[in-house]
Image (tube, rainbow, N blue to C red; front, side, top):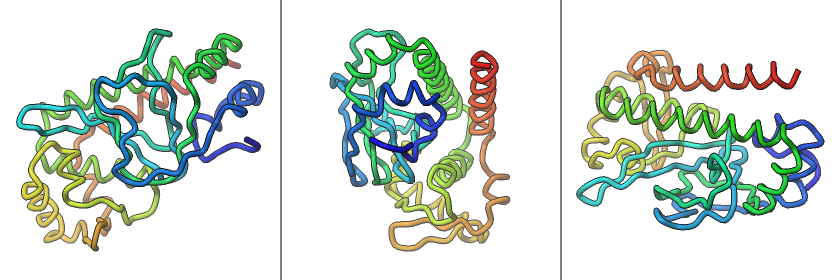
Length: 239
């Protein structure tokens, strides 16, 4: 691969570190609902979402329901685990918004980290950030209302893909929240009545971003703050 792909984690790597990975990066075009891993699957590769591609981690709960615990877009990667033990998927990992993923075989990824301490440090820090997201998601699901969480997820999806129109259905939003489709639809209708959102077939349109932000919980902001702190610490260490 020549040039840097549309993935922020890969773009921030020093040239010598990116060159260790570049020959092994394989672009894969995926559609929404494509499953990368079922819970219990062995993870044989790291995937880097590019551009608008968005991947979610769906954790099973009772009554055959799932709750979205993590969204990963162009800012990060899927399949990175601390240490060098065999990686097993705990959740179902599914493509939420289609696009390009760069597939990196796990063996090549581990070999590159062995050759570069700075590369190992970057991905270790990113794994810490993902763990922080999961902790915050657990707290969010326990402490905040459906409306607050819905606003947060819609804003998060918008930040990942850019633009005010999000290709997100009522059913997909329900999956993110771990509620029935009818419950998610009621929340969307309430936000539509306040002229905060509009809907089109298969998409949600943000009309008033400030009002939506005001209705969201602060969990996303805490995670973003932690990401910034980790990136700042990494930059200071490298400098």
